Image (cartoon, rainbow, N blue to C red; front, side, top):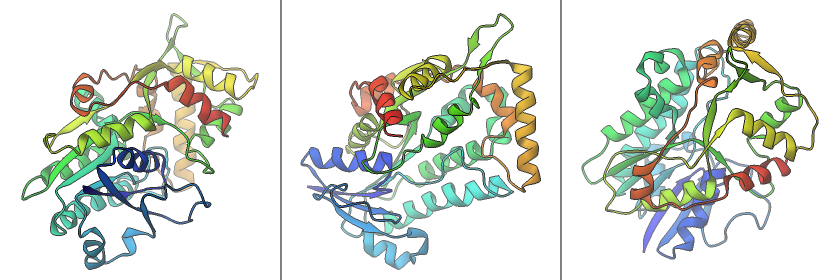
Length: 327
């Protein structure tokens, strides 16, 4: 029986991954999560749970914690919608890139055999649409691409490194406020308009999958037969219009979904960028350049990932409903 160490065990992905690995009855699971400790009955009692900040630990303490573990699952980091103080590029590099590279090195020292990284599907679009210069325009995407590249560069000398590029992930952790809460609040304030082209047709969309599917993919990626590489995951491609309508229906609100032209959208984005500047802040996704992504179909067709990682069908629409019902 192999041992899995999950960093971020109380988060959406880490919580689902803990259950998925344990349910196979082929893995032991240890987690490390930031405080606070969840209410009694939330965490799976079959796993061993630790609480603290790995950034406050010495290298020797980390190696000691990882000794005897086989597989490291990195399900932490700062997400794309966090707006730090300037410079954002430095912030996201320190928060998302440096820890992954360093932890991979320490995992190797501890004798671990595999390191699985949960990263962003923006890496896929960076490779697909080089003309958008996503890493130059967006500090978060720059860090996400660097994170993936540096992890894969650590492959070898006994450690296999695998990166899973994730789309929007939906699911619920019991008694924990969902990361979608801010989205719901902004939707109530009509801050998520639809973007229409010159034919007045709504454009843009994204890809979604459930936390359960991500967890199944992580179990698949833990298999020794999976080589070091990046996999772009996904399941349900959905237009922005369809997602907004579903969210509005579940929230039982009659708010109007406004429509804007691309020019109007860019005007709002300039205002957002200006307000960030006044506060000494900088978005991980630069507002003006991000309007281009909002009008595109950020769709994924994950045939390779499905074949290799063997994650299964799930009801994304139901998961979205459960998320917004929990808010």
